[in-house]
Length: 185
Image 1 (spheres, one colour):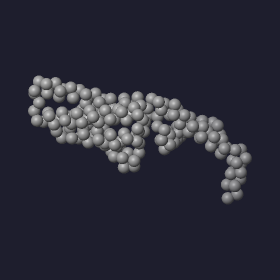
Image 2: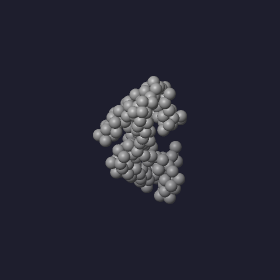
Image 3: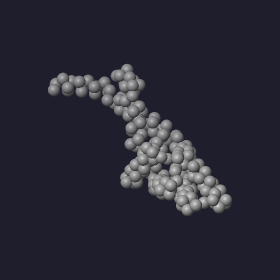
């Protein structure tokens, strides 16, 4: 017990804990500042993430419109066309919400999108840009966001405190961070 007291007094006299706290705070601040400076590009990254889905919906919409003008639509294709029109409406809302910065509304819109994709596939249509494990992950992530009433968060440069601390801890506990702390102390 005496040895522990001696070591603690030695650490306190050298102010190593203060320096360690300052280094950690500076590291967290640097990560947060970097993410904060990138917040303006958040809209572009959000639009870029939904672009493949939007392009596929547009291509399908034009395909079904062309078939409709040529009067080549059967009943299954009419149902698929209705679901594609619904998906187009959802994308219109989704893009408007992104431009207006309504990040808390996006999980509900994404949920509508995922449900419409499921209905489209039930009508014997295939949605190629979202399938398999990628689709299952999107459904689970969206369900989790809705369950906990969380807004959309940019995964590349998050401003959420928990995600900033996670990235900061990854930075400070990486090989370079530990090497810096060992050399500093």
